[in-house]
Image (cartoon, rainbow, N blue to C red; front, side, top):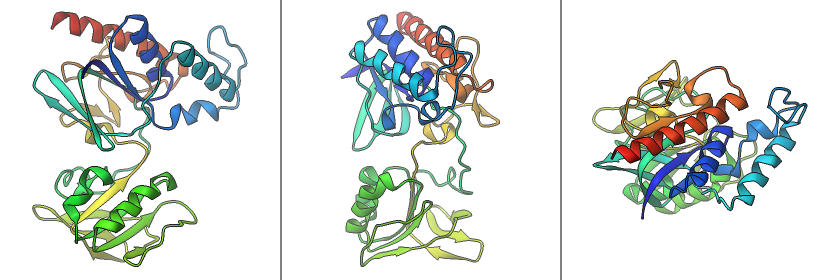
Length: 283
């Protein structure tokens, strides 16, 4: 199946985009890992959302959830790890699956995690964001796994069943993963290095030789998600129509820059969908 629109992001921009895509009767897929925005749910008090004065973040998140459920919109909980231009369409990789869409709307929020030096350089040459997608390429080899959330435990376990040796670098407390071929390293990697492919991961006090590294985060930096996407100061560059520098790709919400406001994000989600629909009509 080729979707009209693929929407990536579960915050206010993504929710708004999904709602409006439904209203406009488009065939779309909406990726919202975690089922919604944790940032919204944790907000103590929201005072500037029209029609909902002095609402808590938890209450606002509940109204968002109720709205999409009432419209029978079901999010896909898989994390999108890559988007590729494939002729007249785009291919999105998520988990073990790939999805095709004629247009893409990025509502990925602010990417706050700093990339590891060499991460972008070696993407596809030893750096991977998806264990189940690329794991078998490293069968019998030595790999590093950088993980920011315990929800990826099953992916780490899968990699340990494939690789000869796993250097596991959990960036959270009390990691519970154990295995005869797993060595836990409680250090922050500072550089991924090599020649044509990944050959080592360096720390401040040394390095390990590996054939590749899996970086398991809840989101992927926009510049790494889609090759050639124009990004400035960590934000996706868009015009007032929420168009990026890549035809057929739009962006909305915090990922496009300040102000980081829920109502601004929701408005841009609406604009992005209408721009995408106009783009599809032109095709």
